[in-house]
Length: 371
Image 1 (cartoon, rainbow, N blue to C red):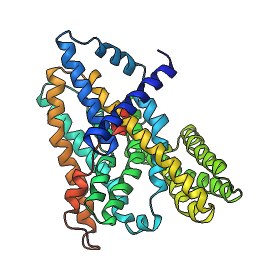
Image 2: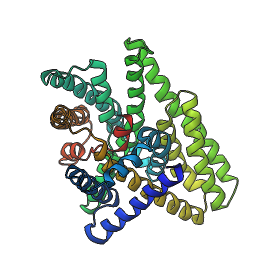
Image 3: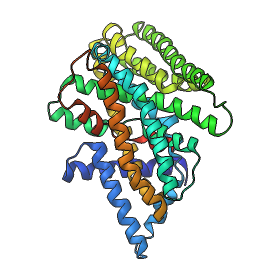
Image 4: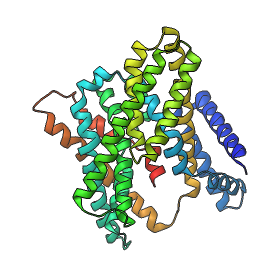
């Protein structure tokens, strides 16, 4: 099966599942298509157990052609991050910078450590020996959040805009920080990075700070080019070039591509939108990136739902997976509660902010891609 056939099959499934969700279920599109994909996957697994459906083998063959990590990290992620950053108000983000910064850095590190050490203890209790650094790798990959599922619910419930900004801002930045942390730990596990705190901190700063500065420079260059023309077709093409070329170049320079694209997206979405685009261009740009964001999220969640077909159903891994759920939730609660407790003497938080941030910190494609 060639690339065109794989892409065609996945897009056809995504369109079908989105139609089913829109027609009969009515959930936000990413969640609806994932639930439909999950139901189809479980039905195929059950049917295969009774020798009723050879289609499961075909679905597995399709998934075998998809490198999930490559597809998400080197394909979808840059577009999703840019689309998300494009619509974040920089003034709102600046007002919430302390809590977002703590959640995306200290909170993510705390979550990584709790999940890493906790999973190491639990796995040893189950008789599954795994090196501590591999458990920390799991902690790093499971800690970044993807709030796409909960945002629609919060908007319909009339949640305060400040809470929405915290959730979205944390998600935008902790994806990049998590990828950097994961790569550093992977280097330690492979013996490519010295397991010394100073060496690890230097690499983290190089990737994260370097990525932010690179994103600022790339975004400024794109902003200057946008100001020089007044054609929505060309300006949309420039944003696509910024996302694809900027991400690839940052990666080649060993800088954080996700952080670079978030910073560039914030610059274009605020200064670029106000100072370099006509009203007509803004309308076309928003429509284009809105559709692309919706399409890629739907495709991503379909892939997540279909992953059931390739998950090991052996008793040991299943038991470990079940035990990881409360551990990850506990880590999320502590990693949210600690930054809020640090900042509470300095500012007020919405009632129930910790609960909403805890349960709103769902996991998504980045976690599966890193795995």
